[in-house]
Length: 192
Image (tube, rainbow, N blue to C red):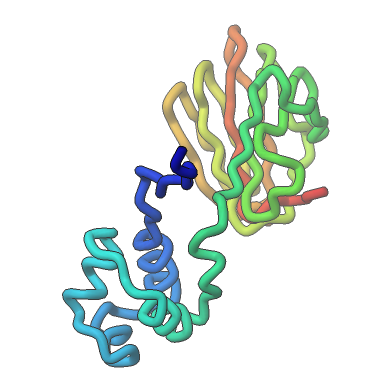
């Protein structure tokens, strides 16, 4: 009887997208990377599109130029799913709102909250700020009014407003029906 050896995986290892994302994040062109690695632009383009597989030595060279560890190209993506039913309830200080954190508590780059607002629900009479660079408010259903120190913005289902989290504001559901709202805070205002 012949010994059975493991067969290689049918799925090719795909590192191109991570290489391209790293290059772009550093503001480098394919030509700049080609000059630094002494590889052709066409070859680097094919590697980034996973049309060819570089040798180990070439991959190490590309990673050195991009200040990227070779191991990070093969690391499993950190993916976490939070169902709405299991999303933890939080209290952002408003009244008439059921608020859930739909991103992981440990996520520090972005925070997404989903609010179910009763008619008349509000964030309080006083304007407040959030410790984040950007706040994005998207109305899934119903209506929402966001009040700033110098203006008021009325939003209907499908509308989105973006502003600096440090901009004093408050909100209210002015409608006779409930509303569903998504709040995105970048970076996260807090994380565990």
